[in-house]
Length: 464
Image 1 (cartoon, one colour):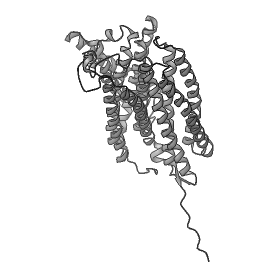
Image 2 (image 1 turned 180 degrees about the vertical axis):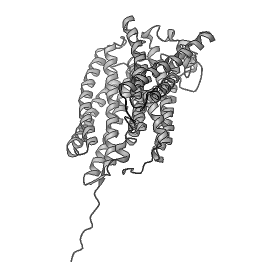
Image 3 (image 1 turned 30 degrees about the horizontal axis):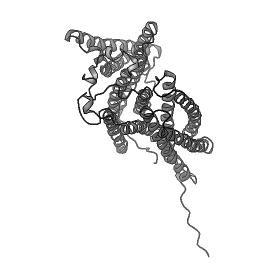
Image 4 (image 1 turned 30 degrees about the vertical axis):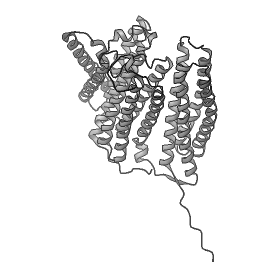
C-alpha cells in the first residue's frame, strides 16, 4: 500500500466529523459512568457519577469551543454536540420511560434534549473564552479522529461482553430481540438492576452497547464515503458495517438458536458454538476498526512513501503470522471460557483447552517479542513502527500476568460455586488486553505494508 498523496478531503465532512468526535466521545464517557452507577456503588458515589456525566458533556463542548474562532461559533457547535449526544442517549432513556404516561415521557425527552443542548452551549462558550484565537486552533484530520473514537467504542463493547461471559450471564435474558417480552429499548430499568446477581443487567447493558456500536459504525461508514476520496476506504467501512450487523445477529441467535420473538424455553435452543464465534468475531471487528482508524490518519494518506528494504517481505510475513496466531489463540480462549460454564472448570475437555491455550501462548509470545523487537529497533527511524513495537512488548507482559491471575482465579473456584467479582475482573481484563494485542498486531502489519516495500530485484549482469 503506497502513500495516498492525492487524497481529497471534503471540508464539510471534516466539519461534521469534528462535531461527531466530541459528541460520540462525550456520550461514550457518559455511558461508561452510567454503567458504573447502575452497579449501585452507594448514594454518594452515585451522585458524584451523575455530576461527572454532566461534566463530561460540558468538557467535550469546551474542547470543541476551544477550536472555534469566535464565541458565537463555539456556542453553535456546542448546541450541535448536545443535540447529537441527546439523540444517542435515547438508546438509554427508554428504560426509564417504560410504563410512564405520555406527559411524563414528553417531559423526560424534552428535558434530555434541552438540558444537553444547554450544558453543551455553556461548555462551548467557556471553551472559546479560555482559548481565544483569530482562527481555527486545530485543522487536523477529524475524520480520522472519529474513526479512532469508533474503534474505542467497539473496544468497550468487547469489555462489556467479557463481563457477561465472566459472570456466565449470556442467557440471563432468554429472548431476543425483545427482553423478557419488552421492546429492548423500553425494558424497565427497575427490573434490569433489581438483582445484580441474576446477570440481567450485564447482559442487557451489553445489548444496548451493541446497538450503540451499530449506530456508531453506521455513522462512520457514511462519513468515510462522504469525507474520503479513496473508494477502498469507503468499501472497508461498508464491510465493517456488515460485520457488525452479522455480529449482532450471532449474539441474538446464540441466545435463541433461531429467529423468534418468543420467550418460551421450549421454543428456544441456546447455541454455545455461536457464543464462541460471537466472542472471537467481536475482536476481529475491533481489529478491522483499528485498521480503518490507521488508514484515515494523515500519516497514512499524506506521509512519506514506502521505503525499499530487503527485509520488507520478512516483516510483512511476520506481522501477518502474528495476527493469525492471535486469532487462533482467541478461538481457544473463547472456547475455554464458554465451555467452563457448561462442563465445569475441572472437566477433561476444558482442561485440554486450557493446556492448549497455555502452549499456544508460548508461541504467540515468541512471535510478539520478535515483531516488537524488530519494529522498535530495526525500524526505529519510523516512529509509528517503533512505538507500535514497544506497545506490543508492553501488552504481552501485561497479558502474561493477567493470564496467570485469570487461570489461578478460575481453578480456585469449585464447580457450582458463585463467581467472585475478582475472577470476573481478572478474566475480563485478560480478554480485553488480548483484544488490544490483536489491535496492535493488526496496526503493525498494516503499517508494515504501508511503510515498507520489497527491494527491486537487480538483473544479473551478463557474463562477458
